[in-house]
Length: 259
Image (tube, rainbow, N blue to C red; front, side, top):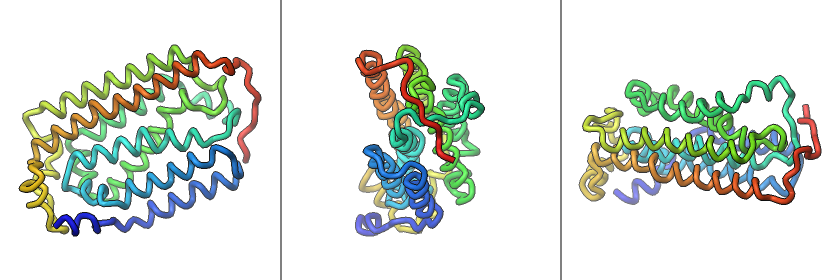
């Protein structure tokens, strides 16, 4: 059964196309730069998230695997992609006005809360179209969340002081959701209680791994509670480093976004 799981890679042509198109567009617009590695890392991690056995487990088997996918799609991959942008690259003023820090915060935090409403969580676990919509929304809203902190132009970011508060508030909001998921006496996402089991691994998951539906939900809640806040904590350290950086300047060089 373990062999079946290790070979359970998911065929997802849309994910493959996106992972090829994003770096292609990046190199066309930006060219090769020292930061290009971040974009390649984002594309590679996206492929692993969407094609590896993790994706197979997230398709109705384990709520905790679904949670790992969420963390990668919303917090890690968008941050890597934004770090690939060359310093000083600017978006048009009209687009920047849409990236209000308060709205961006609600985009990132709200995505986690909304997609764990039981009806939506169940739908994403069993419906490929809903799962695709979920993936797109997490990447987009995750990018919006990180924009006030990682925008390539310094003057389009919020101050380090406000950035620390921004991240601490996000950590608090996700901790509350993580606590609810961990200690809830009911199953939030019932699709993970009795999966169709096309891989024939359900007995291994519950028998050998001891991952009953309730324990699985508790692990998923802990993943939101601890690893997510660890990512926010890393962001806080980044804001502190930015605060005390001698190279920080209120008027950095400006570069317009290529069209």
